[in-house]
Amino acid sequence: MRAVTVTPGVPDSLRLVNDWPEPAPEEGAILVEALAVGVCGTDHEIVAGEYGEAPPGQERLVLGHESLGRVLEDPTGTLQPGDLVAGVVRHPDPVPCANCAVDEWDMCRNGRYTEHGIKGLAGFARERWRLQPKFAVGLDPALASVGMLLEPASVVAKAWDHIERIGLRAEWKPKSVLITGAGPIGLLAALLGSQRELSVHVLDRNTSGPKPDLVRALGATYHTSSVTELDLSPDVVIECTGAPTVVLDAMCKAAPTGIVCLTGVSSGGRTINFDAGALNRELVLENNVVFGSVNAGRRHWDLAAEALAQADQSWLTSLITRRVPVLDYREAYARTGEDIKAVLDFTQ
Image (tube, rainbow, N blue to C red):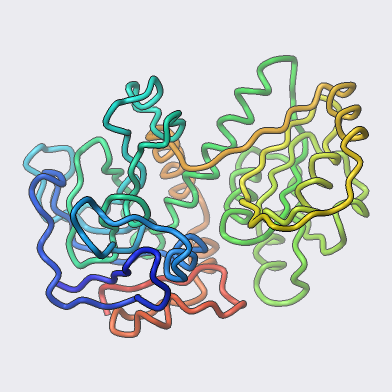
């Protein structure tokens, strides 16, 4: 069968292999036919050789962690043949740590977790794959063309879940959220903010293209100024760019008792002048919280599936700016600077 693979750590090793082995039964009882995989910045970095880890004893890693497939067989009865399904990316470590032991693998404490298409597990960019039932997330049939958005939506669902848990420390009735960055994570964060009936503000540097209209279609407000220039004191800030200046400005922007969630990952290697004392004073005197969030647990995948099923399907479809057939796989993994979400399509 066909599979899109790389040799981890080796730039320009992206290859379509036509005789990749069928998934081993040990991978899981549920056999799935691939429909599509989404492509994100993590994939670009792995293709560039910056990181990635093949399964034990293998030289190449199958890419793809934003999955969408259709069940071919499930002898466990968890799903039915024909059901849409996505695979949870992270699996618990073998020790396991205290969190992995209770299936909170997104909060792994010793770093020995594995991840499909990233770290130690074959990804979903292959024509067939297998899942264990607890890592198989069934999807509403209406999501047949956009279900690969579930993985980034699960990251956002976790962020909102943890924001709301932190909010329970006091009487807290948030009214507004500022989201920095209008990529897939930022736009999906805005979607979940609008579903919570908050006043949603999205900041991004793009002044043209589809992003402003996508934000406005949610009933949200689109901004292109700097964070410091915004006339806002949001109760919640979700930072999705990882840009150091934006991160630090966002940390200072929240209202008293506000919560700032950092989801963007900075590349590092850059220093900027910043008054750390002023930041400390503001966080302490205003009872603000800043925390980081990455990956997602099973409950977040389920919450994300509910959120996508409730969303306007035409809006979700608009997030996908390119659908690329498998034979043209290199195009799917090429950075264009104009994409919101590129998708590798296994049905073409």
